[in-house]
Image (cartoon, rainbow, N blue to C red; front, side, top):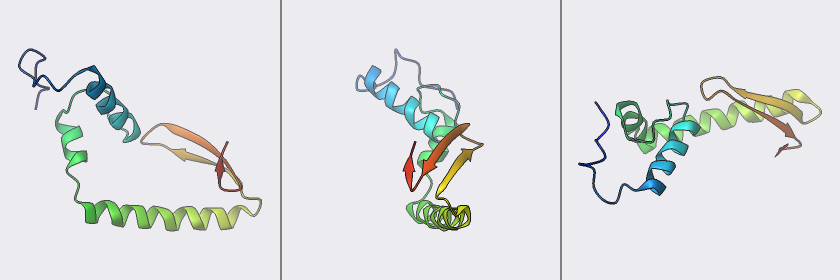
Length: 93
């Protein structure tokens, strides 16, 4: 699906909403268009039960990772989202 052209979009889809959609896309590893395109729509429509399962699985992975580091200090890399974060004693650096 193509993004809705600005001239036919509802008047509530303003610059602030476009920016928010772009932030959502960035945080979910999607191409940042600022519009609710097909990949964004698919990500938004993931059922709550699926998201909850993903969160639980990722929490278990993070807890296991934290226990393995010993020092509590590590670098967390999210390849799909192209992000890197440093963690020290459970706090982002």
